[in-house]
Image (tube, rainbow, N blue to C red; front, side, top):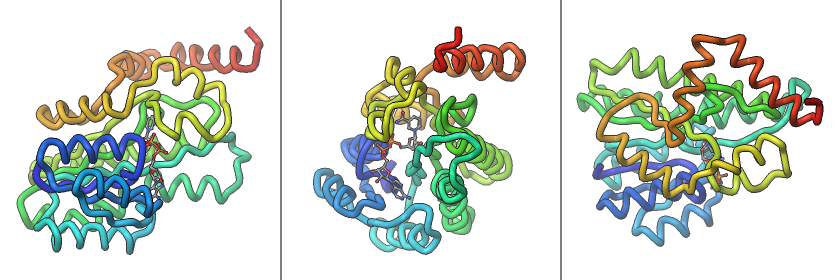
Amino acid sequence: MRNVVVTGAGGGIGAALARRFAAGGARVIVNDVDGAAADAVATDIGGIAVPGDAANEADVHRLVETAWSELGGCDLFCANAGILTGGAPDAPDAEWERAWQVNVMSHVYAARALLPRYLGAGGGRLLFTVSAAGLLTLLGSAPYSVTKHAALGFAEWLRATYAHRGITVQALCPQGVNTAMLNSDGESASKSLLAEGALSPEAVADVVLDALKSDNFLILPHPEVADYYRLRATETDRWLGGMNKIQRSFEGLS
Ligand SMILES: NC(=O)c1ccc[n+]([C@@H]2O[C@H](COP(=O)([O-])OP(=O)(O)OC[C@H]3O[C@@H](n4cnc5c(N)ncnc54)[C@H](O)[C@@H]3O)[C@@H](O)[C@H]2O)c1
């Protein structure tokens, strides 16, 4: 990869991706809604900081414009920014809405801005950081689970629609990764469970680098997720029963 854009790259998985691509010789645009965090990573890796909200269409357009004006293009756009919102159906509408905007519409805005350029150039790459929650579910967080399923659905749709036109779409679906997202925002039973098998963001970046060679749609840093996903598809009731058993254990009931 020569020219790369990473959203949410001021910390966590996005920063690890940005550092890994820069170490491999790529020129990297570092986006984050936290401008100081974007600046710090960009300075470290000799990249370009473009602060902005990945869930704001004008900001995403600016990001893509900057890739073409400063780097001459974008071989790979990593739509990585995402937020974890806890809660059940009674989470406030504003939280459902923000989860939808950041976890889903940011991907739509990226595709909208990139597709005309990618199609005109005969191809390009989009990497969406989704989550294992988009293939399975995350107990304790309905907005996150639902919006990550939607993000995966959008990635599948893009891949199915544009693969023959040179556009490669991949979905990164880790379980726990040791970042601020996993380690802050209060304690939840699911997060404690995920923390047990958590990978470092650097390990996830290594898996991504390798997966870019294969073009496989799903990138699974935790390989066991493939088994859970298979079970969910083929033995749905058994899988749901297993998930409910975990929920009961969270509630101290089993
Ligand atoms: N950490 C995990 O366990 C885990 C597991 C699976 C998937 N993910 C996904 O990985 C992605 C990155 O998560 P992370 O763990 O690195 O989180 P993080 O909170 O550590 O880092 C996310 C970064 O994105 C930035 N950001 C948040 N909203 C933004 C927005 N609207 N526009 C631009 N930047 C924004 C934050 O300021 C932060 O620097 C997310 O999509 C998340 O859902 C994380």
